[in-house]
Length: 95
Image (cartoon, rainbow, N blue to C red; front, side):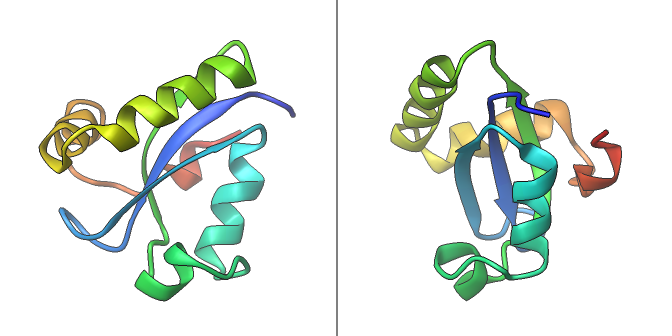
């Protein structure tokens, strides 16, 4: 399933956050969960999918990712808590 998405991974509630973009969210979230990708998420243990947003095109998703990354931590926390106030792992909700 190819569906452009922007997503945020965390290591715990209100902990370290990672914002990314992908065309295959279930696969990418699995890679983060299993520490299959070297880099930031593996180093900081960001394994919990706490927020995501689906887009109609990869260009739109990348534009949104850049907007989120340029924003403050407070804005990222507000995004997460508006969609997922309990900070549940959303991986299980993916089709």
